[in-house]
Length: 366
Image (cartoon, rainbow, N blue to C red; front, side, top):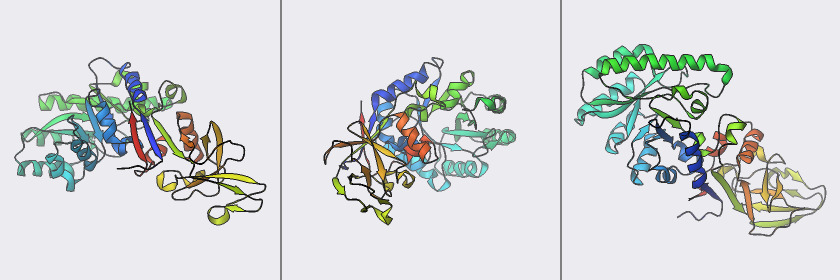
C-alpha cells in the first residue's frame, strides 16, 4: 500500500475527453490502440488500462513485463508488445500477449517457440521500417517474410504497422507522405501474399492530427491521451490528465547569510522563509529545476525552488506566501506547467511525465 503524501492524481474525465477528441477525427470503423507503456506515461498503466478497457480496441506496451502486469490486473483486451526480447517470448505466449516481430532474428526465435508449444494461428504483428530507422523489417524483406509465413500455420499476422518519424512537422510532409506510400505498397503485398487482410496502422497522435487520410484500420494514441498534441493550438483542445501534488513538511526562517541545502547553493541576502516539500530528483524533479529555475504553486502563488534539488526533497521560497505546514503544494496541474518544466530542463513533456517515480502515489479519479 503506497501512502506517500506526494500524489499524482490522474484525471479520468480528462482522459475520456481526450479520447473522444481523437475519436471525432476518425472514421466510425477505425480502431483505437491506447499506448500505456512506461507506466501510462508516468501515471499508472494498470489504472489507465482498467479505465479505458471498454473504450478502446487494443493496448500497447513497450516490453513484456508491462503487458504481464496488465494481464495480472485482469485486462482481457488484446495487448501488443512493441519491443519484445527473445528471453521473454515464452512469457509472452503464457500471458496471451501479441509480439511485434521486427527482424528475422526475433521472427525465427518466435517461430521456434511457437513450434515447441504447438501454437495454431497465434497473433503476431509485423513492423516495417519505412524511414524512422529504429525497429522494423526493411520493405525489401516482405517477400522473404511472406515465404516463411506461407510455410507455417503456427502464426497469424494480426497487424502490419509502421511508425512515422516526423508526423508533427508539417515542413516534412514530403518525407511523411513517402513513408505512408511505402507502407501502403508493402501492405498490399502482404494482403496479396497472405490471402487475408491484417489490421493496418501507421498513425500516432500527431499523425491523426496531420494525416487523417492515412488512418487505415487503426491508430495509436499515446501522448494525446495524456493531454498533449503536436503544437500549442492542438494541446489547448485537450485536457490535462496529470496533476502532481505534495504538502509542506516544514517551514524555516532563514537569516541573512545563512544557507539552504546541499553545497550551500542558496545563501540568503535577506530574511527568507522556506518550505521543505517531500519530492525530489528520485521522484522525477530534475536537478536542473533548482536554484530559482523551477517553481511550485502554494495557495495559488508561485514559490521558487531554491538551492539544489535533493533526492527526496525540494526547498522553496514562501517569504511572501501565507501558508502553513501541511498545506497542499502543486508541482503541476496543467499542460502549461508541464511544458514550462520541460522547457526549463531542455526536454519535452514525454520525459517530464515519464520521469515521475513509481514511489509517488498514483490515484485515478473518474
